[in-house]
Image 1: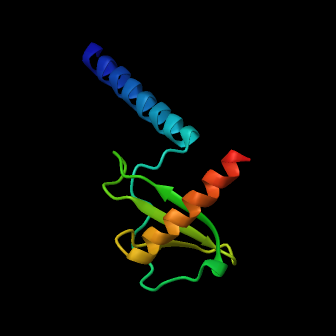
Image 2 (image 1 turned 120 degrees about the vertical axis):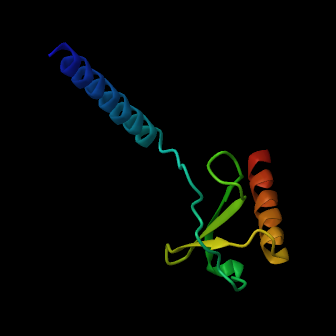
Length: 102
């Protein structure tokens, strides 16, 4: 009986630790994987872009990711190796730097 009790107690402790860990991750809003499954193949005009989000590679993903929100609130991932995407990032960096100086 003691062996079954110890096993049950251990199982409950592991389950509690797992649930509390999952809860703390979801509260922190941490992404544990890449957000971009695929990238948009064509150039997107800046007038259609509402915002740009750059997520640098890290333990969650081995790639830098660029996610744009379009005027219709659709999110699209861009290929960071494309020249036009690099130019877009640089333009948005300049806008942010300019706004921070004001």
